[in-house]
Image (spheres, rainbow, N blue to C red):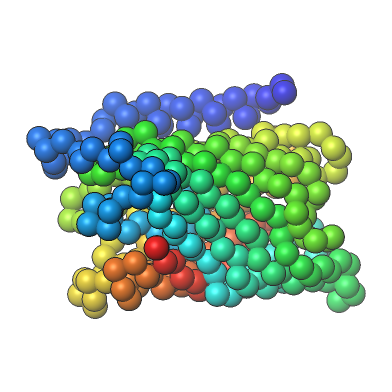
Length: 298
């Protein structure tokens, strides 16, 4: 694939950001204490309950986190209900989605396998001028298969990073997907800041199908997320604010920018409820996405 000068520039900026972050990696609070040795645990020799790491849901955010599920344990994250409205190229699209679980299974102390099942979708697109129906569809969406490999910080410290390659299997019902295999790789990072703030960063490179032909294009995603506990309300309540951008080389696929807000409430040690609202920052971005969901670990 020949990348445009814009894509090479975006990739260069992302690599530069990563190098800067690694060069300025903060000192860990517990560097003097070695991380626990969990190398003996596996899918068939699960991590004991008292040795499991902290519960780390990725919801409610688009950004991935760098932590894997402990070996031999499951984690399930799912929307209860998600509503999205977008207005692009003279047409408005409304979509509802429910029951779209991400199922994570810990394989080793630093690797897990993740399956993202796009849930039951209903989608309708109407012309802004006439109000007439342009397209609609309903059914289950595509399936994404991921492997998360933690590189550092899985069991302690102020910095963590992982590598997440993934592939999309085109399992969507007619009218809800493009019917082709796509994939990419993500590099999520997390930095613990003073005063209990947490900064998460992610760079992702995707290879996607062009909007108007069968060729592929490069898509670069960058995400920054800042979260903090709302301890003045409850020690189990936290909030996050996130900036998302996706810029590709296909001239018929516009760039997407959103501002995302989320709330998470830990109702039990391994059960979290969440809600969020994502706002489009450009006309080509989905205008509004509202959702609520749950994460649980076994």
